[in-house]
Length: 174
Ligand SMILES: [Zn+2]
Image (tube, rainbow, N blue to C red):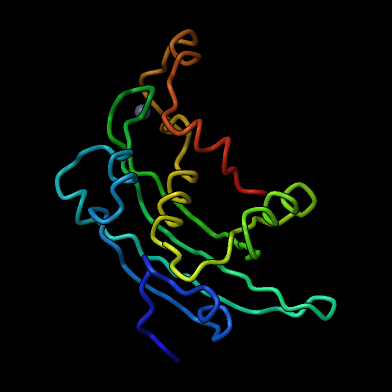
């Protein structure tokens, strides 16, 4: 099995046809958008995010479909919006994507199918996909389950959410 896949320049045709697997422990310093969303604690840039991307072909009704599976488990650090103390937040990503030929197909099929769609590419940036999904998996308003400093209801309504725009574009389907 080939192991020299490049996460930021992935040939998805070959990756899915060969049943490719890419595994990495990526330091947060290489995931700048996620780093920015985290609390700036010492050595945060060196925290590793282990992740796995797998490709496969499926035969559905005589047609070949290419799929990607992304899995990541990681612990983010954010500020609790009640007590304003740092908190560790376990993040899990476990998502399947079906690959389609082009953007037009993705737009045409997206409303009619359950699964998430991605456009086939010879130079796919899997690390950017990982970043998108880590951001989506982070809580909208991080809060300790058991917090000692309850926030007033008025303030809670006003909490900004920096990823609201991204979330509305790419909310994972259930
Ligand atoms: Zn708290």
